[in-house]
Length: 312
Ligand SMILES: Nc1nc2c(ncn2[C@@H]2O[C@H](COP(=O)(O)OP(=O)(O)O)[C@@H](O)[C@H]2O)c(=O)[nH]1
Ligand SMILES: [Mg+2]
Figure 1 (cartoon, protein in one colour):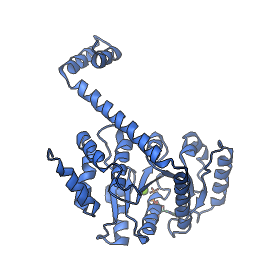
Figure 2 (figure 1 turned 45 degrees about the vertical axis):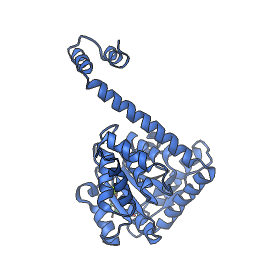
Figure 3 (figure 1 turned 120 degrees about the horizontal axis):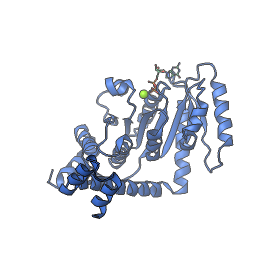
Figure 4 (figure 1 turned 180 degrees about the vertical axis):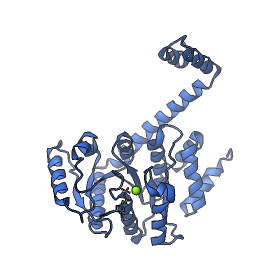
């Protein structure tokens, strides 16, 4: 790994569709701080035509089913697609169900589709950061569409949404949890709303409730459209594709995508370097002494942190 051409060779192979090389790069980015920085600094700014779409919503809402349809749609136009699944409850994580379904549809030799279940524990800063890094890697490797499927409604989803260019929130009819959606800040992160399972009663009510909530929200220059889908039949999927495309055009026209991505990338790089420095400070003899003093109750943690970081 000391060989500087090691990652360059892997990147070149991955760009031409070599799956093993792609897998190795992803593992490096997921598991190792130094390797991650080495890889990501080498793919920076390369032919960035990719778009990152985050799909979030409660377990069972139909996210994976919709992801299948999106992949199928994008493969028809020969786009290279990467699916990153962050859903720990998804059968995909255990049984590779989504991966199997996608491979069944497109053939195991379809090198245009990458399906990856994210490691459940990132090395630093948790899943959200690991996902961001892998998404950035996929962009650099030339994937056109990157889909991040993540479960639930909570801080980690909000974090993952920050890594996405377009965030799709999936709800289902009778989602009496509309208030919870509002509370969890999902209204703010959604660029597109999907009411899936529109074959069930109450989908019109769900659409109305969402539309009313959106009308009350702070006006911005993008109002999230509400799309209805039936995941099992594929009905409405084209509307979803078009809504994602419309949001992409909107952001691109404002010329802010590159700015947002670069700013986000710098913030993450700084945060990672500082987190690593913190770990390294703890691993020194002074760090271990300080830790022992805090554990023994001789000094408080804040004094300990000051001693380590500022040397007093
Ligand atoms: N009736 C109905 N079932 C659906 C629809 N979309 C998905 N499902 C089913 O809902 C279940 C959960 O779907 P899945 O995509 O795994 O949800 P996820 O947990 O959000 O990824 C599966 O049994 C799907 O077949 C839909 O539009 N209507
Ligand atoms: Mg799923």
